[in-house]
Image (cartoon, rainbow, N blue to C red; front, side, top):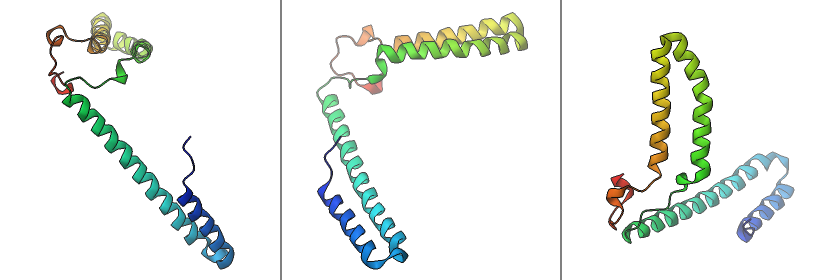
Amino acid sequence: MDAPDPELKKDLDATLHARRELGEEYESALVDSFLEKVEQRLDGTVDRRVRRQLAEQQMVVARGASAPRSADSWGERFGFGVISLIMAIPLSAIAAVQAGLAGLFVTWAGIVGVNAFQASHGLPSLSRKGRGDSSDWEE
C-alpha cells in the first residue's frame, strides 16, 4: 500500500476543521469539495501511470522486442479451455435439439476451432522466429 499523501491529509484536516466551525449546514458542500480533490488526485495518479506504461511499451517496441503478454499465461489458457467445455454442454444440447446430429457436429467443430485458435495464438510463429522487427500489429 502506498504511503498516505500528506497534502491530502492536510486537506482532510482542514475540511474537518471547517465543518466544526461552520456547522452541519455546510457539511454537504465541504464533503463534495474534499471528494473533488480526492478525485483530481486519483485522476492525476491514473494519468501518470498510463503515460508511464505507454512509454515503457513504446521503448520495448522501439528496441525491436514484442511487448510481454499476460494473456499467454498457462492459467489463462487453461481457464479458457475449462470455460469453453462448460459452455459446450448447453450449446451441444441446443444444437442437438434444433438441428440434430449435423448441428452437434457444427457446434463441436466451432468449439474445437475456437480452442485451437486460442491455444495457437500464444505460440510464436515459425515465420517470424528470427525477425527482430516484429510488432504486435503484424499478428
